[in-house]
Amino acid sequence: MYRGDLARDGHPAGATLTAASAKKLKAVWQAELVGPVNGTPVVSGGVVVAASAGGAVAAFNLATGAKLWQANGFGRLSGSPTIAGKTVVFGSLDGHITAIDLDRGAKLWDVKAPGGQPAIWSSPAVYGQLVIVGVGSQYGDTPLEAGRVFVLDLTSGRTVWTLCAMVTCGAGDGIWSTPAIDAAGHGYIGLGNPDDAVLAFDAAGGKRLWMTSFHPDSGRDVDVGATPI
Image (tube, rainbow, N blue to C red; front, side, top):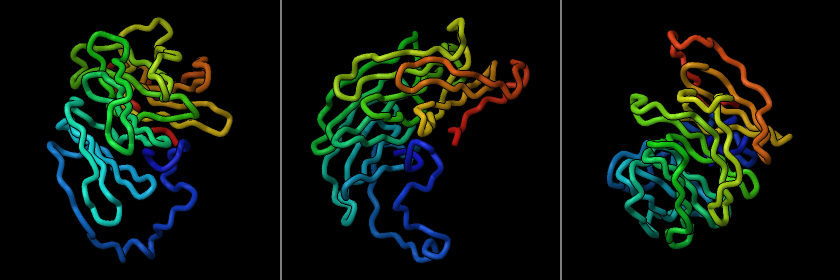
């Protein structure tokens, strides 16, 4: 998953890359997809999965680079896919969250996030059986959507809960980062303008815990766009 684990610290258990071993890295294979690959590929069980802005998701053999399958037509994809067991989950810039089968690339479900023209910029978080996604606006905030945390069931794609970033569920506070989740099951996610804040929530039930703004002033527009750790 994105940055290795739900803590998003970039150093999951079992990681072997160190400063000493990094200098020994060399290219083994490369592959191309339609459109740029903006998100980090993910690896599970000897399979590498990557998504492109051209709407393609493809799986490759980790050792050889041989393409195992490619699925197309998912719209513009910006964030990294997330692998949970045999399911690959990702979001698109046209506001869809999609799950496909890791072995074959077959679509399992597809759900559009709430709002008029929402966008999913980041990688979904999978917490148990929950798929947790941050929802924001299209590029340039046109139109400006209500930022929210949108949560789906991993198996069925049904909506489990939704939490608006603003208490009023007004437009703004868009989310384009991936949530971090701690051992207590508390989630943390960054918000955009006007609150420019970090929102904490209960990952299981969607209860708002707290929100702290860096600069609660819409004139500054200093969005919290990065994933908390």
